[in-house]
Amino acid sequence: VIVKQGERVVLEIVGINGAKHTVNVDNYLPKHSLVKRGEIMRLAFTADTPGIFKIHCEEHQPSMEGTLVVLPR
Image (cartoon, rainbow, N blue to C red; front, side):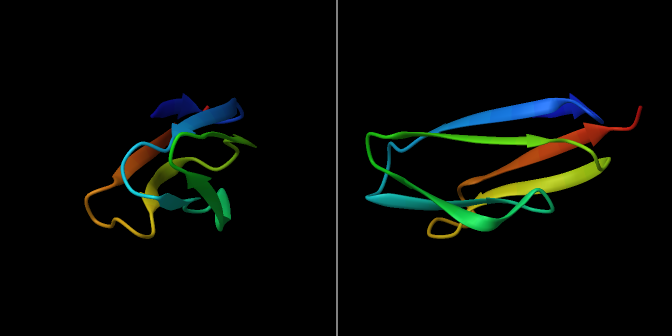
């Protein structure tokens, strides 16, 4: 996921594989959010810090990981 600094970000995460997924976005959503199979979870935040951040599922690391890239203004 690539965004510009200052943009509002809404990630929609769908629980498909596994009974549950404890999701976290480094720097932006350090508290884990839980999504269960068949549910859609929306995580919203403002990308105010440029850099490269990991999006990951605690139960399924390292196979369920993504990257958030926040480009500087």
